[in-house]
Length: 460
Image (cartoon, rainbow, N blue to C red; front, top):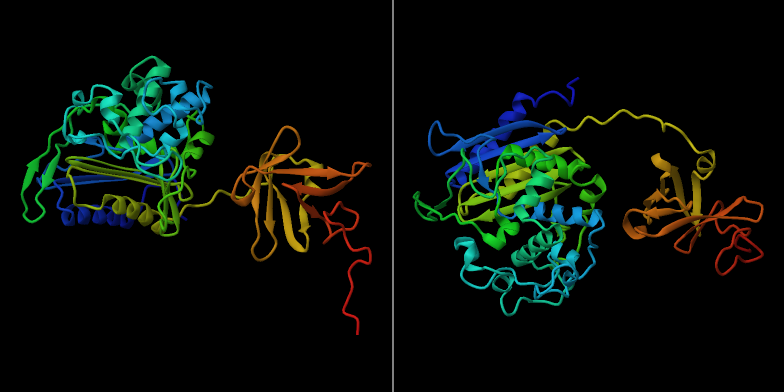
C-alpha cells in the first residue's frame, strides 16, 4: 500500500502540470508557477513560461497582492494573544487620530467596518506610496460607505489602518515587525517588500491580441500592509503549512483556526464563501478551503488550504488579468485529494479515562428526542442526535467542571452536570435544556413538570 509520506504518484504530478500548463496557455499569461503542499511537505511544483528555457520555479518571486493582508492579520492576532489589545477594542484606543477610531479592530480584520473599498484618486496600485503620506490621504474625507458591522465590504484602506496600528503598538515599522515575527521564524527568507532576483516582471496582456505591455511597480508606502509583498511558491507553501497547523513561535493553532471563523454577514445569496479574520473561506467540490487571493497590476496570486485533506496549493502568475487562478489553485487541491486521498491515522484508545465521565456516555433524552454522549480526548464530550436531525456539538472541558460548546447552535453555550443531594447525576443542563436518562424522567427537574399519571396508551 502506498504510504502518505511517499512523493506524489507520476499520474498525479502529470495531472497537476497539465492543469497549470493549460491555465497558462488559456489564460494567456507570460508565466505561471504552482506548488502543492501535502502532509506538511512540498509534494510538487512546476512552472510554465512564454519564453523557452525560462520556466519559473518555486524560488521565483512574484508579487502577491492582497495575500499580504493575511500576514497583517497574523501580526494583529499576535498582539491580541500577548494581551496588548482586544479585538473588540475601538481603534481609537490604540491609534488616536485615525479618523475611523470608532470601529473595532475585529471589524477591520473582517472587512466589516464599512470603510471604502479603495483610496481616493489616483488609483493607489499604480501610483507611488508618497502620493498618500498619511492616513487622512488614504481614507479621504468620507471614509465610510456603510455603518460598522452591517455587512462585509472589502476595504484596502482598512488594512492600512491595521498596519499603522501594528506599528504604533509595537513601536517599530510594519516591515520590521513582519520580518521579525513571521518571516524569520517560518524561514520565509524569499518574501520581501521589494523584488529580489530571481523575480518575474509584471505584464498586461492585450485582451484581443497576443501582445504585452509592462506594468509599473511601485512601493505602496502606507498601503503596504494591504498588498505590498513579493514571495515565492515555496515560501507561500510554508505559510500555508503555518495556517493549517499553527506554530507557537508565531501564532497558536487555536488562533489560526479562529482566523477561519466567519466574522460578518456577506452579500445576500452568497452561501459558498465567507471571510474570517484576514482569511477567505469557501466551499468547493464538497471541501472547505481557506486562504487568500491577491492582485496588483501585472500580477495575480492565490493560496488555498484544505485542512481535512491536508493539502494546500499556491498559484502565481505575472499578468494583470486572464487566468482564473483561484479556480486553478482549487483544482490543484482537488486533483491531489481525489487522486491520492489522505491515509487516516490509526484508531487508538484514549491514553487514560475518567470513570465518572465514562459513566456519562451513552443515550440521553431531550424530551423524547434521542441523543448520545461520547467521551473525547482531553475530557471533551460530543453530544449528537442518535438518529435523524438535531442540534449536536462537541464540547471543551473547562476547569470548573462544565463544558463549552464549540460549534453550531450550541457554540459558546455551557453544558453542566446537575446532581441530586446524594451526588448522583440527575440530568444534564445545556443552556437550560434538560437532558435525562429516560424520556421525560419524572425524577428529574423537567421544566413544566411531568404528568403524574405518566405514559399511557390510547383507551378503547
